[in-house]
Length: 83
Image (tube, rainbow, N blue to C red; front, top):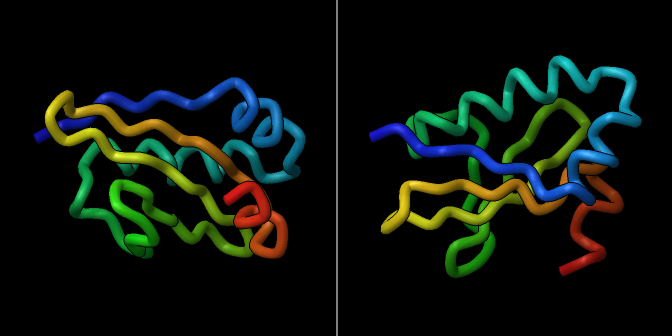
């Protein structure tokens, strides 16, 4: 099953500021093949974390609609403060 990928504007704005944003975006595109993606950990009911080097991406999975929403991308120390 292939998932549609959406990035919230707040997450996209942060992502564009990072020096390796292209690399991070390539890794995020791998989420279309969820759950067959490496470095994924479930941290909530439908909330997951993906490790991308020193960065973390938090995303929600809506299996019924085959949608993944990237809610936050940041360095490890700051990404969880919102939650």
